Image: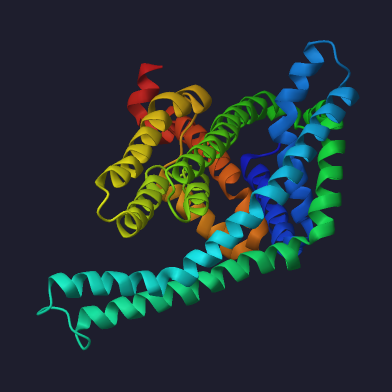
Amino acid sequence: MALPTGMQLKYWGVAGAVVLGGLWLLGDAILPFLVGAAVAYFLNPVAERLVRLGMGRVLATLLISAAMTGAVVAVGFLVIPRVVAQAVALFEAAPDGLQQVHRFLEARFPDSLDAESELSRALAAVGETIRSRGMELLEGVVGTARGVAGFVVFVVVAPVVSFYLLIDWPRMVARVDELLPRDHAPVIRQVAADIDRAVAGFVRGQLTVCMILAVYYAGALMLVGLEFGLVVGVVTGMISFIPWIGAIIGGALSIGLALYQFWGAPGMIGAVVAIFALGQFLEGNVLVPRMVGRSVGLHPVWLLFALSAFGTLFGFAGLLVAVPVAAALGVVVRFLGEQYRESALYRGREGEGRE
């Protein structure tokens, strides 16, 4: 006999509270396992495709792991140090750049901008704030990566976890399916399949789009000779999963740097503008339709709230799970909404009469 609805809600509520409590208590200790699970989930479709082509699961996992290790090593040694160096240089150059803006305005508007004016003091304050806050942010990110994750964690533990999870993924899914409550197994499978499509479509697809855009923006901005083009391009691509935010921040920063660096050369400034115009066209008309498709999208405000809430509650580990959890909650909320619209509570006596 099935348990009463109230008792089921109680058990599921306790289970959810235990999961959230464990995430909060363990925090950064489970970070390598979250990273390993995320990598395994991301690469599982590749492994399944290789298996369908006739390759064994272990051999496919070994091949994928070798390719990923090579890519991570290449990025770690060739890209990340340059991005960090450019970020440091950009923050350090902010006060000097705003002083240049001050001199430019002073030369053209001498009466409205003097050393004691509000605008002059504001520009100086903004420059110092960017340098101090930017360096604090960068030091915090680097310090978190060293202190929380650690070199050994990301280089050894996370890849090992990912390797074993990728090998055992089909068996783990089958085992979880066996543990589902029999009365609700079909519904749970359907909701889980919808969540998988949403997470796979949005997270896997959008992450691929972000990486492509990061390479495109960084390469194109460096090609036209924009100073700090690498760090601006990488940051723009990585935050492009929030619609318009990446383009607005990256475009404003790039065009501002282009105006400062290429003043008097409108062709170069136009080239920077064209890079972002083309990037937006490719993102909206080619990359997102093909790689994200019609999967369940997430409202930008919901994404920002999820990142803020999970980051505040659970630290860096919370940031890793924020977007997948937000996508899953979106599916669950839609499912509950459909159940509500089919219930007597929503339809009332009129709905009962039609039945």
